Length: 186
Ligand SMILES: [Zn+2]
Image 1 (cartoon, rainbow, N blue to C red):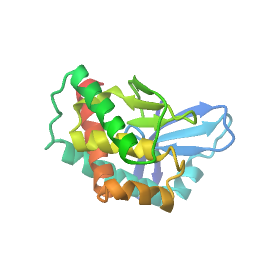
Image 2: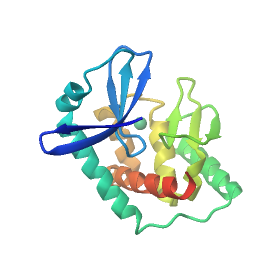
Image 3: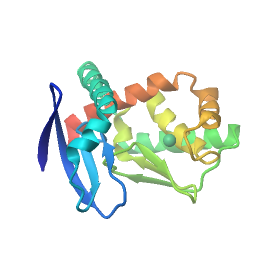
Image 4: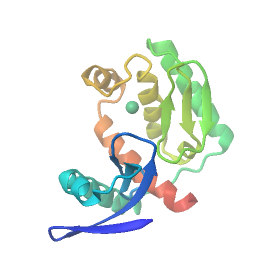
């Protein structure tokens, strides 16, 4: 359900999802603010007040990405072309680095481009099919780099920077394409 609260002169719009969790958290996975709350949590306004700087910053990043997405176009690629690209890039990374994975899965994902399980299984969002090759390769490499470092710490970004020194810009582009895909397919 959509709710609103006014903090100073800013109106904050948000959705709420009550779950069986201990601590509240804020998400922007789809572009809209979602409060994930423990059951019986009531202090919405206090929580939003506490995180307002982060919320405003995130909202402005998303606004920019949405605007940017109007200038971009999705790639035309068959499902086979997409899967071939994925397999050959994974092979390439495995041959030229110490990053190794187990299996590759393709799935429609609601909130991310990819993930790597503790068993080192790589899951890729099928919407990656419509992304430029560099972005697709980056997502794969990003997840494969988690095979040696789970956290996004300094050591992790050092590994990523070896191949993608411009990873900050690519992450921004990924958000732009995220909205483009959402607009087209959901
Ligand atoms: Zn990551």
